[in-house]
Length: 112
Length: 112
Image (cartoon, rainbow over all chains, first blue to last red; front, side, top):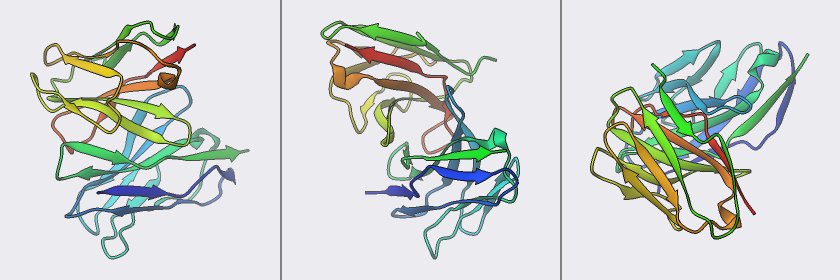
């Protein structure tokens, strides 16, 4: 079945460093791809999404490009802040069912 | 517009006790979902409801039941709680399946 694989964390960075969190997927057909963020003690919030190949989703300085050839949707940010410390989840929409499939999450810790 | 609300925020149960987790959304969404979140395992789908009057099992339905009371409300019931059900439970909703899901703040459940 469809699945999402994320890099294991935690990812620890200093403020203003460049961030990459890797996400690859396995899917039949052409799913939509999502990044969600979970701040401490809160529910998940949509960060960005892309619905077809070569689309770039962006929000709050974060970007991710839907790469069909490498089945990837890596999350990037040029300069992280302490306030970006959170858990980040990659997900895909399963077009065979009415569901999202989530990766296991990657914790990001940013230090001043 | 409150989005997705969940009650209670926190609950402690003894093994064998029952309880119902409540979820409501005010966004006129058709689809609703219940997930559990455990360390290192990401989000796992328990049950979902594609539309009012329908419910389907997700990845980990054993030990749970659900009721889609109306379009707004989707409750999750534990008939006989077990320590393995200690987790954080999230409710989510979407306009329809495969689209962006909006999450509630979660219910933290401890079963002793």
